Length: 231
Ligand code: CA
Image 1 (tube, rainbow, N blue to C red):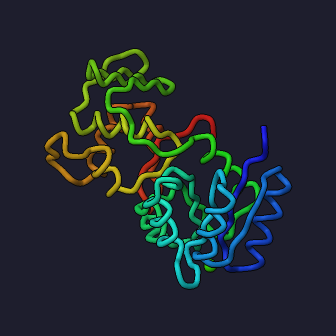
Image 2: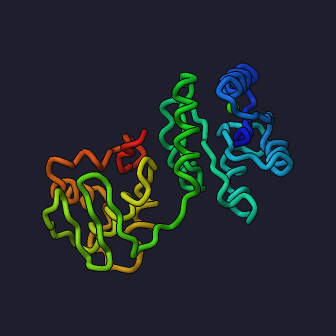
Image 3: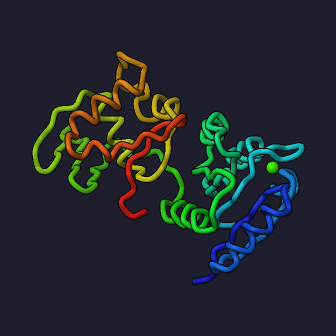
């Protein structure tokens, strides 16, 4: 298997060097850029497997770059990890909102960086989950065709909204979604949503999961994630 290629777009030379060094040490091929505009050119030329994208860049910032990548067929599914300043949860929400696959806060350890890159590559591109697909995760079996959820082999009743929310999150383990994304993508317009407050639905789902409530993880200030057992 040939090496995975990463494009890193980062305007701070020290951080760029650190990221590049650690990725190369782990066997990744690396190409770099220090502005959003040149980053887009490098991506077009290098056809990477994944992009590490600093949010705050001069000129075209990380959000603009991500939007542009998502707007073009050839890069629509290209995995993007947004690099943000610690504590800037609102930036993460924006980043995920424009289609970033994941995020990492500065400063990060080399180990954390590599783990994130590998996890995103393993998960593959974000797809709208097939609403009819049966999903099995640990103690959980979700069968949308029969509208049936089993927890430890026992059938539990879920409302349509809870059902779609759990099915959606369980279809994308390890991936963080904002509340807005969950409303749009998971709950959607197929069912009449009585309560547009996602937290209420998550609470109800957790209660029904009982001892497995921890499968639905809260990501503080950002949203929710279904626990990735492989991570
Ligand atoms: Ca920066």
